[in-house]
Amino acid sequence: MDFTQAFAISAAGMSVQRMRVEVAALNLANAHGVQAPGAPAYQPLRVMVTPSAPFDALVASGLQPGALPTASVQATAAPPRMVHDPGHPLADARGFVHHAAVDPATEMVTLMSAMRSYEANVAAMNTTRTLALKTLEIGRGA
Amino acid sequence: MNIEAIQAMGMHDEVPGTAAAAQAVPAGAGFGSQVAQGLQELNQQLLASQVDLQRLAAGETASLHEVMVRMEESRIALQLALQVRNRALEAYQDVMRMQV
Image 1: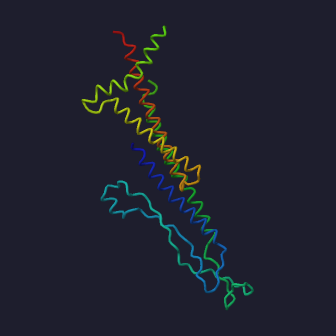
Image 2: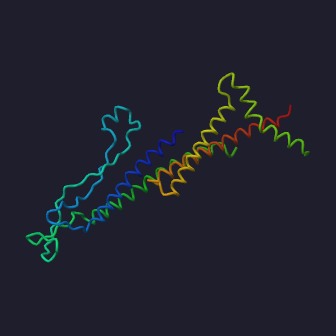
Image 3: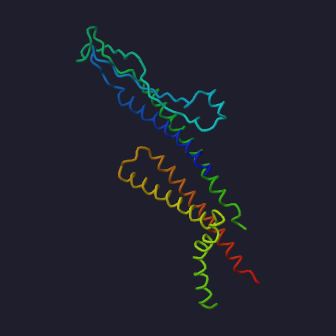
């Protein structure tokens, strides 16, 4: 059946958006983490959504399946946020504390955008489903 | 209406699945075997949805939307089978009402 393909496309989009939500939640959970001066700091993660094949290859193959998005998680090399707090137990020699370089506002916007995009994928899938069910109504009134 | 007429209809309901398939099989895949094969595939799909739901209830499912998508697929397959059955039944009843 043809409709399964449209369902798979929408499901791929939903997977990507779900991963974005998970990564944003992980970043937010680590937003107030503090590292000791010598220890490696928490690196905020970022989801890279790329097509599964280069665009020219997709065009050459006639935009057949394979255009589904794939998501990968990458760590950003942002330097830790330094806060001057000499009384802190983990302050370094100059009195700075290394906070995780997470921007809560950015993560909240990512959450919002992922939610809207997920809803768009659900709407696309529902439309496909309605089409399929409407197709089955052909000739019913006869 | 007498009861024999209704009994006769009940008997005829079972005929298309076996007799039609037996007659048409030598000429290739007949309508009966096609219907049987479609029903078999539909049953497989419904069973897969059932397994998905069991996994979901057991907490083993990684992605909820995959389960929902497969359930919708099997729902559409079931609706399609229902429509095929309605058409076949209508055709059968039309033939039965035919005055010869």
